[in-house]
Image (cartoon, rainbow, N blue to C red; front, side, top):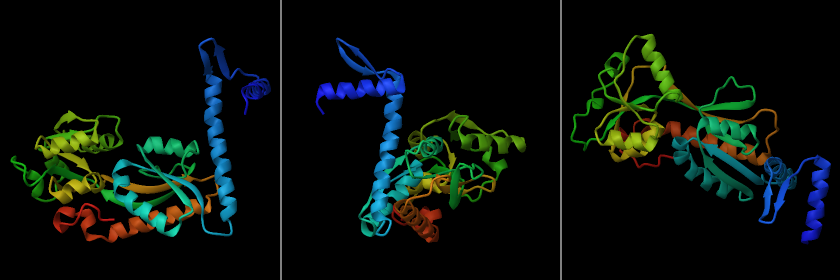
Amino acid sequence: MAQPALSRQIRKLEQDLDVELLQRSARGILLTRAGERLVDRATVILRQVDKTRAEAKSWEEDPAGPVTVAMIPAVGSIIAPRLVQEVRDRYPNIRLALGEGLSAVISQNLLDDEIELGIYHADKSDTAFHVTRLLTEPMLLIGPGRATGSANKSRKGPVTLAKLASYPLLLPSRPNALRLAIDRIASAKRISLDVRENVDSSTMIKRLVQAGLGYTIQCISFVHDEVARGDLTITPLAIPQLARDWCLVRQRDRAPAAATLAVGAIIEEIVADLVKDPGWQNPQAAGKSSNPA
């Protein structure tokens, strides 16, 4: 479009909306706050138009169109390789996009219609979402690997809450959901845990534990690759209240496209196979590769 015609269209849009969308000066043109919000909203609308067009072409054919899946990091590293391969093999007309983030961010992205599917620790009571539980992971005590020079107490068997008090712990700081759950359980039993440092980095926590500087509490997906390599070890916790679900989540009030349902079904298959894998929950015993999926 030529510049004069574009300017006329923008002026008509500003008149129609009764807001200023652009700030014009000798130095150039910038979006106003209203303009920035309109761009964000229009991007979502145009994406929906693109999805609808793709879906219309595939209502009587193979699933097609864009599907964006966001996962928490520990889950993504395990599921993503097989998911990409399966979608390529089965549904070449689906345009798969993957991302990762914290549970709260993924939840908001679903509400904002920026993604179609999320895999995270969802609140199953939230009526805005359709939630499918994929699996439940118990929390484990994560200790240094076999090659670490320091004594590795985490190899002596299941650890009760009372025994956990004798371990130097490295945990994320409050208000991290896991930390809140650990503190709540310990407080209810009037047990004081030895939290040496608050560490708000999953990579840093794993490195510190690997160096023999403490222990942490997490599920197997958090450390599966490191345990399979022998860099870290795991010990069951005799604390049944500490567990986390993987949930497949989508918006409840939107009818899912065929492509979204197809990708969701593949994810459920992958997780079902994962649960059957004997090396999944205890990779240090099975001695399997770091990619069980």
